[in-house]
Image (cartoon, rainbow, N blue to C red; front, side, top):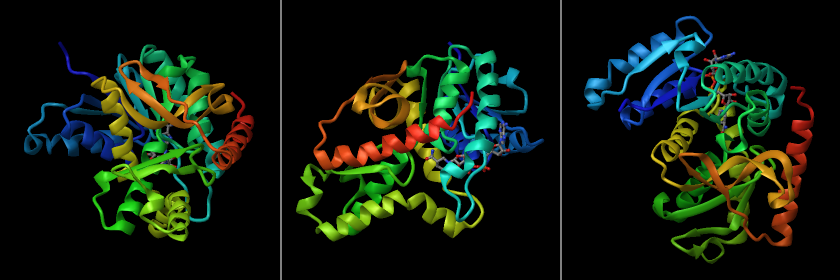
Length: 309
Ligand code: TXD
């Protein structure tokens, strides 16, 4: 029985950390792909020289040829430009759409049965384009955003309360952008509602910081965006697929009526297993939560409407 195979399309800041994490966790052999000459092979060699210390036999191959990705069980796609200070994720649409179309064709033509996790921004639109160009069923194409956004929410709550982040439950719905919806009512510290632990102003400030956390990091780094936490979040999703863990995670999934939306990708709670998105969980929302989510749906509909496949 051979080891599983994950191909990482994009060997930039996030791709390099993803390859490292997958090897360290002995999840699969890795093919690291990039169009910049030498970038993938160079990072592959560097990571392979750490395998001994990690006690793993998973290896990394670097390439710029999609044929080397053939037969992959899973792809994680970070190909595309990151934001610069002052840019919104949506500003990346036209450039990254062209890249994603190219990537989708490479995946479709070499691994027609693969599962694809998209990371590239603007996330909800890029996942949509990936599904449209590959022609893969909706359960096999989904996006990473909510796992990162909820991790940010958890951290800010833990920091405010001086508690372990592992004891915080935080839920974020909606598009991966300023209209994302941190659901305070569904968030807690070991079942204790946030409203019993933090005053409303502090909660409101945390919600706002979660929505702007990506931009906060872009502003600090000046050249590039968050990359360790997105790598960890996407590899967490990959692990749930490869080990069939049935994790309940917030992911950008294709909606066909759920949450009152159809024909778009958006962040919702899903069950992730060997088949990909195996189930979408519908939460009962109150009027104010529904209104916030509708704003997010409207924004994603508008963004996807700008896509020409
Ligand atoms: O939560 C989320 N989904 C976001 C996603 C969190 C953080 C970053 N987000 C987005 O991921 C970000 O806005 C970018 O669109 C992607 C990748 O971010 P990263 O920080 O890894 O960008 P880099 O370091 O520029 O790496 C991108 C790589 C780079 O090496 C390019 O040469 C390569 O993508 N690239 C390509 N690879 C394959 N095929 C094509 N056509 C291609 N074009 C560029």
